[in-house]
Length: 445
Image (cartoon, rainbow, N blue to C red; front, top):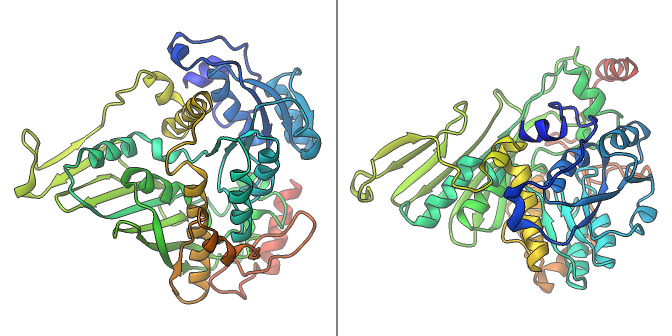
């Protein structure tokens, strides 16, 4: 609401006109030479622009092919922002950093073009859509002078920040196990989501395997624990859609149960983007002495529990509480999107650019490619009955050569290239003729 008050933003309406930006005294310590920023992807990119402008960034250019979204972005960002519909032309515009807010799975090729110009990259979703792209991304990054950050915002939700504080404090003991669930179901009859989120039959959301959208589940527990997955196995939960549903999805997997063995011996269980009832983001951290979790359906409250014999001095054996923010930017954090994560990821990016350092895990490039590898190889595990896969470390050339030519994908290419791997645990699953007919009727309205 602070961002909405300051910029006149309406909830879920990023096309609203930005008001003139004024520096906030709370930003004094974060001021730096004004960063010239280009945005690739007009829908989500507009929302991120508001947070970047809080730090004095100058939004200089935007690239968006869709004319409706491009017009919306023009109204939102103002006429001074130069609009492009071609990335190669856009990348020649004078700028210092690029926000990649394009299609979920297509960030790596554009990040590589940014690296070739030593532009800093704020990548708003998964780092790479194929294993081969992950290899190419790492190699190009190492030749550049760019700061790279995957803008995974869920680690910065209040309860996750508090769980990291507890883990870092050591009172939970050695961390053995952690869970992460990002459960975001949509109504089968949500025609607005179909028209804006699945607006043509080959759209990535109609082909995304249930392991792929993983950063909201895996990123927070990597952030909290500091552990890195080294092996992955997964199983999917399949349930076909009703015949009278407008549907173009080529998968009816509703969730995937993904398990990782980590570099410190711990185990993670995550669900990536699941869609069972009811909506929640939930995380649980278990150590030898105690455990902490945010409670489903109870806002930002945290349950902290210790063994009776391991209660720290002055603490309670069990405590249900809402954590404090303990941050000078509390008002901005509270009113930012995604539980404050939108603001805090941008703040971290600006700190890294100002100091000339790469972000910490799990926001750095190598952590990002680990998360993408868990997603991609987790789906292969689903297709092979839970077969375990080793998760590569793309800092290592011996791991890169294993995947440098691996471009298998469940998605359609922009050039009409069809998918090369099934997106569903039941590879022969297809939407019915009736479902497709109803889907196309929705798009026409």
